[in-house]
Image 1 (tube, helix red, strand yellow):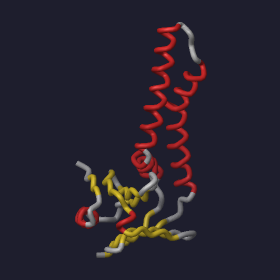
Image 2 (cartoon, rainbow, N blue to C red; image 1 turned 60 degrees about the vertical axis):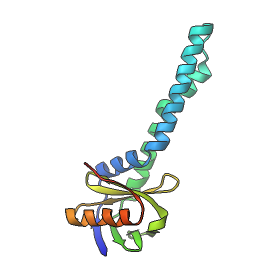
Image 3 (cartoon, helix red, strand yellow; image 1 turned 90 degrees about the horizontal axis):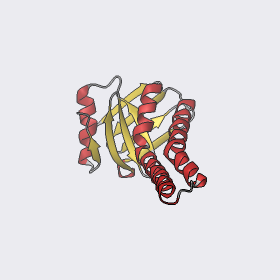
Image 4 (cartoon, helix red, strand yellow; image 1 turned 90 degrees about the vertical axis):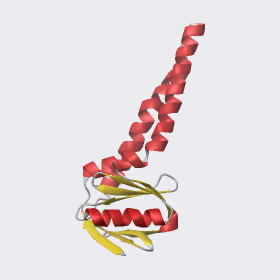
Length: 159
């Protein structure tokens, strides 16, 4: 099997892919931030003293870090925004534009998420490769997801 498609970057799809691809680090930062804010509130209630360092650190972790993570990654993806050719085959997934070519063998990929308008191939270290499905038929998307499932990957189909 070999499926090849060419697509221009779409800001809405990139934003959705970044939100989905970074959900774990963002959740960790938000949880740590809320824990800091709750600790600051608990200390204020029990001792009457407000710890401004704990309050600022909690707010930064709960709000600032997720915004920085999401915005910087989305901007970086858009900045590199060239028309890209994607190739999905029995060997893995590859993407190529006028500046570079990247290919990933199936063992390097941990999961595949089906999002509206794209497939998100997740790898280790919170890296991901969004592949738009514009121009692919439903049968081709199902074929890709079945191939990934046969390779033992976690496949999250859109319901």
